[in-house]
Image 1 (cartoon, rainbow over the protein chains, first blue to last red):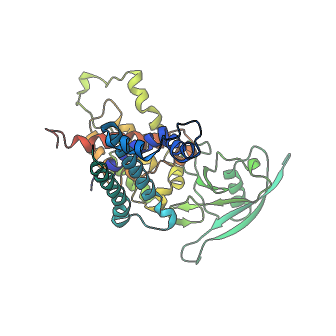
Image 2: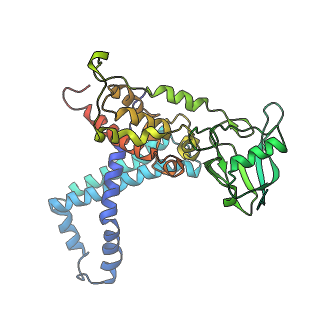
Image 3: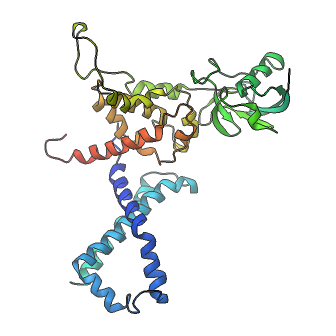
Length: 118
Length: 247
């Protein structure tokens, strides 16, 4: 019997799910609603200078990498297991497309966070 | 009959070799408040149409023979009451996800094969002779597996499972629950063998945690819980392989 490769993806899925449940809605609200409309946050909270300073610090880099990559892995796994509802059969190709996108996003985020400097 | 009411049973009929496709046949019946769907079918078979075919035995939700789709949901016909489906008509069909053998009887050989694959018996952790006496167990040790031993193999959970419907290679809810029953028994020593099946592509990983299996279970076995516990165990063993000294 062939061992399933799903435990690896399932744990990333679980970690991303937990993280998005804890902070996802709050992040969307702060960055997408509160900051642009100036609702109860400092006016330059999301200014370029603040954002780049955040991304240059080690804690900020780790936070951004974890949020971007785990959310992607969570979505990739969820989408992979929902594909049959769209009439797309699960298989190596669909797996490569879903998990490949998450891997690509993780690599791009890592490279960008390193390129932005310290 | 005192206080009878009327309902129409709309039953799926299919005879291999004769029917080209399943058809629905309507049987108007009279029933009393205490009559189950199974008794309704028996009334049809005894007095209206002797060719109607269905499985049944105990009439009291113990044997697990009379599972069928009742009003679109997997139920035991002996445990569903006609009075709950008024005004009707009440659709009665064979269990989903299994090939139809005839009318409401399905071919269960896939499930029986699966039962055989899970080593559904205790292989003693340490063999004891008769002189050494019985294997003792604490109430806490019993509690770990007892609820999973209540399965009556009615296969309602397989008819409920969308993943089994998509790909019947999936070991499925009841077989996993029973596997878990033996794996969590303190007397058993065959966990490693069963975990190979749990970890495999046909094992627990085909489950997407829909949970309908546990909802339809007439014995509150909670197979979804068994699958979930084994996902955790399987994930631990997936990573444990990479630790030094582990195969």
